[in-house]
Length: 576
Image (cartoon, rainbow, N blue to C red; front, side):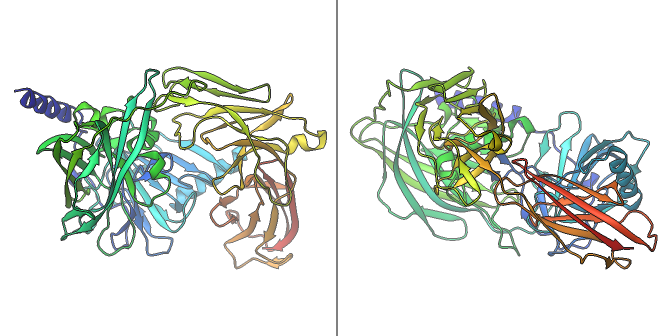
């Protein structure tokens, strides 16, 4: 009777977390002239976030027409060097919002309006909002053209559907809005066992146990590489490495659902139906973060950490913990399903081993809890402020001074490094870290925080100097230290000085930096501020001519500033 009641409770929970179902008949395909294949799917686990849409391949080219998927209006236009780059948002009559990212350009009338607004505001990055009467669209109207802007590593369309009222993102493949060819079931790559012990101070101690790769039996069935039962402790959970493929492409995809049974009774289900942006960083709790950092697959934890939303877990018993007495055997079955409905299964036996794992309490560690803000210090040289809600679970911290890493030419290390949190501790919110050091006056404007990477090199974090300390907000838990970057950016024009550009649609430059990256830039033509697009993945800065040619010589000046306050300037002329 207890098992029946548990199953009924879990079924009710699953029903209560279902997202609103969309009607595929409301929508047409968002882009023309493509083969319908995708390079990324909804909900894939990325560093620090779930992927919020689908990436539709455009055959390695730009300029494919983008169309309104349903009747509505253009409600927002965004232009930025990062993120979605050039993006257009349509508020639709059916209560959803369609988002198109990484555009090459907008429709001509919209493009002209955006250029005027950028000039009026003298801003390269803009967010423009519109009501229903400004840019109404009918289903099938062209709204722009696909491109490679923003944080894009190749031409494609990022497309997503959101609930307009709540901004919840929908799994549009599962909802049937986008239907890629897919008859390939997920691949179950490996299984890992994690034994746990909850300490009196609330910290969950872990001991990694057996790790087994899999052997494929047929298209849908797998077994472990060793047939002997997996030895498990009295309390623990499993981590499954899984990935997915689709017809006609070599890309790897995330899965939609992962379900686990213990002796034929379901006890765990992860499902990616949707999420809101405030839940984005929970991907680091849904995954087994220490492993997810080092694998190309999705390393999904078959357990629900405290504080992780129920919406990702429509079925859950005992938070996914498997309890096994010494000598006791059970049968585990795991099923992976992709968003096209293809499934794969893995079954194996487990056996309880003798002995019990007891985690050790570090009496010198300070316990940080998710629900409370905290301040950590190393003497008077480092202070870290961790806000409430930053941690996914309680951790023990022993902040300490460690050696600073090697730095490249032009980068000067000005302090030791400081370790704040344990390795592989994901953060939902940034912590604010201040490092104090005696810094020469001439270097203070260029002093920033850097992190020591796993390979021992220095990587830029940011921040600024004020009153004897360099302070920055960051998600990283790598050791932090102060550096001074005094090397200015490098600017290269992609045209000769005095060049005749009368037959060109644009003028462009390449801007690069040795360490802190390009932070801002200003383009002047004939002394007047001129809009310019930056493509960070290629280093290009491009102005598309939006004013009539005058058949005369023009002056041009580009000023670029890096993240450490160093500046560079290029001056020249062109004819147009």
